[in-house]
Image 1: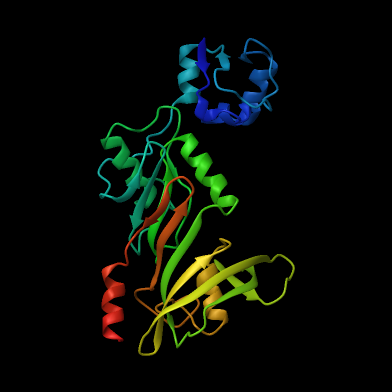
Image 2: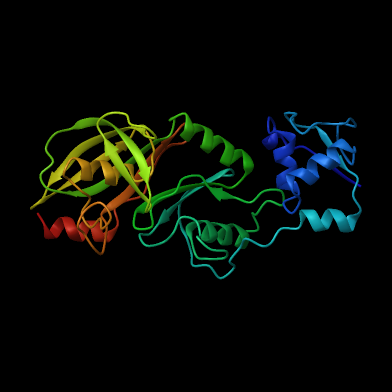
Length: 296
């Protein structure tokens, strides 16, 4: 028998979700069966799985040690020889790191190199990987976009960041170099629809399957044939900045998907404003500076 006392960081999480995290190799059907048979109980009583947990709640799991280990054992997510990650901000619950252009935020195959794997390796080397939770990133950047990626080191960190991003309390600011002379500070409202081929389309008016997007563009520096922009996301949708700029005839320089570029794409997740923390900034990478100096 295993007895687990719920930590405060898991307060208000549903029991079924907590159990699926605790027993990653067990199906949800199996977990519900164990609840029905009272092989798993909450505070000494039969539970349905839909209960919201409170700090101090006790979960008892009446499995043999071998069975518990079989269902709870996790494959190691850590690439111990992963390349170093550049940490920009860190506290007990969250971490903000720099993602270089060309690196995936999360792996598209088991064990592949990505920002998430590098964060896990970094925390493992510091002996800071929790036993009951796998840290994970909460925002993704396109492969060829550089800049800030946020991750929760703890369940509380992931939950807080995810909720603050969902409710738009986290303000995301990007820097990009767009094609042409962009002169007016403006906020554009449009509608974005995902289409086959890992692309999106932009519409002025709502169409079936579309979602509203709001993007603020602030011209910073006029270059020879280009403009350095600050972009503030008031919504966060797939390819939002790239597709919106292309739709108004100012595609991101180097964007092969929505423009006619190749090589480096000049889009950088520059800063985030997080309640209770403030502004975290990832300075422009060297390739931006070289491009700007070459086109002044």
